[in-house]
Image (tube, rainbow, N blue to C red; front, side, top):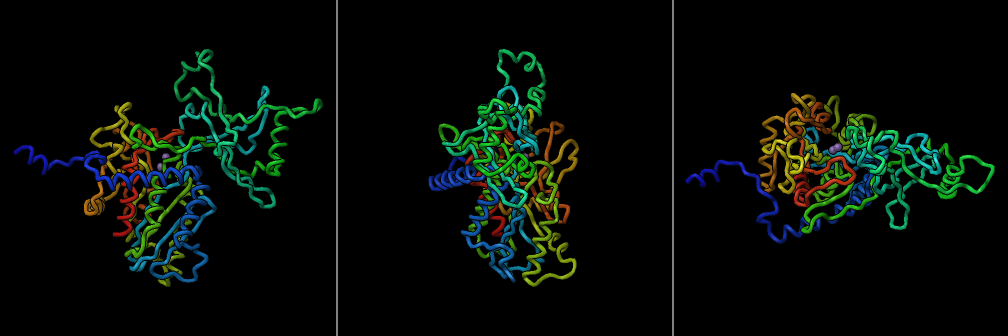
Length: 465
Ligand code: MN
Ligand code: MN
């Protein structure tokens, strides 16, 4: 009798892999393959947006500028400075009755080259870097690294760089001290073990052949770069080159149930929402997908979510559907719903002391909702209203999608945020909703294939509602 009552009253979150039918299991593994392939082509925000644009065009989306007017069913996108992007499918209802937004970010923690990166020291040439986002510096030494980005010449010519991904390419690395001589280093606090200025990329060692010239190794590197790309040292001033792990995305575990890859925060939610949008037709409310930049450094700047570029995009939708009138944009936001789709800290049994097990996201238990984020006394939290949480719960339940609801770590241990608050501040109902990750922000992050598919199903159901 107790067992029956328990069955009826308890909220239990089961492992998603259990009681899974063969077809669904196949779908999960197939979807993960597509995801890993995409990640290998899209390690940076620019690469992600370029690939997403390709995919969108293949699926009938057109650039905003290609439409004079928009009508129900039209598929439209807008790319902001090659680093962020908004996509929309115009719904049957008027835009003023509210839009359904899913927003993720496509930037990930990494090392950026400094504006004057190149120098030589002790027989080696180096690129100096400045880290971007929250990293544990020691994790970035002694691993294979690749270079991705653009160099823009003064005349506007843009050169795209991608070195270290192809098997025939050289890779780069940041050296670390041998244990034999690391006594002093090993006594330091972990955060001080590797100095930020020491995150210098080793890029060469052969001197230019001329006895009379100084800085021969630097010269030799510049000569190679000049021959390959037609650039001189000054051109690096107007470049954006990112140093990222040269690892490929791989299946992890004997059962291949997990994905190990760089940049899953937050390309995992960006990819799953993008794929969900590509399969949508005939939506009731206008469906909008945000792929934003600069989340890892506070969403600031004209490619970050804080910029007014998004308002501009929605205004243009209102203009081109012929709906617009003064102040209508404010109304649109007040009647809209959003999933802030960003990763969640997955429960790691090796570091269980930082999590409240009862309120943690577990890998393999499906999409993870965060009612609120923030830190300490919910400082800076974007807190979803109970009414909206109920609406989401109902949506997931009726679509038979397993979900869990979690907090990012124990009270007072730490905390974090996403782009949720930005849309919430505009008046949108927002909840954080994403995939739990292990080793978040590390060069190699771990996720469950079950959760990836769960995210994709959630996003599709949300837009279809
Ligand atoms: Mn994130
Ligand atoms: Mn992050």
